[in-house]
Image 1: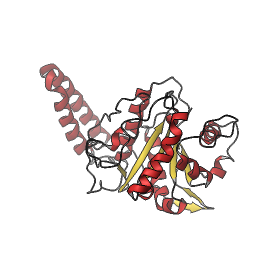
Image 2: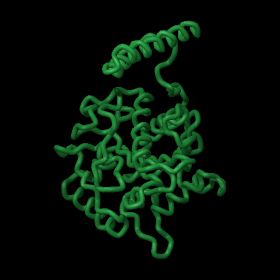
Image 3: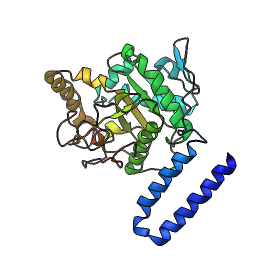
Length: 312
């Protein structure tokens, strides 16, 4: 088996050199075709995905566990060692959602604050700052599969809060943007369920939404690099992943949507140092896409997804 894979690797290296030398303008497409064929051949010798799909899921003492993932409650986060990065990161998130310091500004998303207070959130801490590491993708994929069945029972403002360790380097808003989309794209390689037939897979489509385990989600990113849009700032790279049913319930009528959006936007001018993003809009509105809303820039420019389809 190892010998076969070595031969295949040598063959692919030869193809790379030949293509680049003879047809540089068509190198990208030819290489993609070659890589696709190589993947089909090597599938017979090794698993396709880096995720461990067979990891057992068990429930013990109210804590859902996967092979290496714990979905922590608020109380369990507060039992973490005080000097651990996980506890410090949790305390930072807590201080954002529950402004207790004198003169602290109120976080504009009152629904996130309510979810925190009512213990509707669950927390997962990544192994490293690179979300595309196989161990991180496996960790998160298992956590999402464990979280989803219980999400409805947690409350109407539930969210899976994904927290990465503090970065060892200073990163820009744009570099975190790429990291965010690479995380979502990586999760797609771990998905055991087909893409829902009623949701387009092209990220530019008005009714596109990120899907995992057959369910649409709304992920929102917060980064250390955001300075003007303080509602998207966190000292640790954080992604709040909510099943889309949370928003379907919150916005179930036009009147409820106007009331919910109005309540949040009323607090934003005092919190953010920039006007609300023009990309924020109702799901499915012609000329818009959810891909522009998941990751907002620190300026009022459209935030584009670097991938036309997360499965390609």
